[in-house]
Length: 231
Image 1: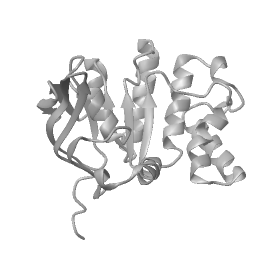
Image 2: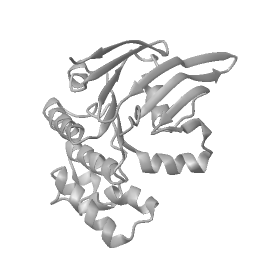
Image 3: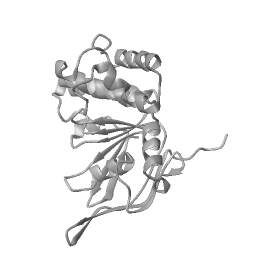
Image 4: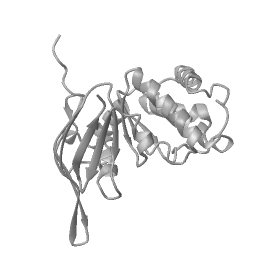
C-alpha cells in the first residue's frame, strides 16, 4: 500500500498584510508537515503569527504566497465557493468564545454543518443527539446556550465541530474562557478524540494545555522558532 504522505504540507507559506504604508509579514516563510492523527499545539507571543497560521490552516484566510496542501489539495488553487465547500468537508472549528448561535438549541447548533451539507432533518437530528451524548450533553438537547455553563457551551462547540466528521479539528484557545477544572475536562475530551484518530491543531498560550499535544510548535516573528516533540 502506497504512503499517502502528510495530511498537511506547508511550503514557503507567507501571509502579508498592508497596514497603511507598512507591510506586516504575519507569516514569513513557513515549511511544515503534519501527519494524520497527530496532535499539535502552536505557541508564541502576541504578534508571533500563531493566529494567522490557524486562520490559514482553517481556510479562513488565504496565504499571500507559497503552498498549503491538505489531503493533497493545494488550497490556494480553489476559488471562494470551492474553498467554502472544502472547509465544510475537511475542517472542524472550536473557538475560545464558543461561537454558538444564542437563538438555537443545543441540537440545532450541532446540526449547523449538516444543514449546509444538505442533510435531511431526521438524519441530522439523530446524529446531533448522538454527538451530544458523546460529549455528555444528551439531556440538554433542547437547551439554549444561555442555559448552559461555559464548559457545557464548549462541549456543544466540540460536538458541532465533529458533525461533518472532518479529518482535522482546529482549536483556538479552547480553554481560554474556562476555569481549570472545566479546562481539564475539555482537554480530556480532545485527548480522546485524538486517540480515535482525529488530527488536532490547537493554538494556546498555556503551557499546561500545550502539554497535551505530541508536537509543540513555537512561533516567533512569523516563522517557526522551534518544535518540541514527545519521544
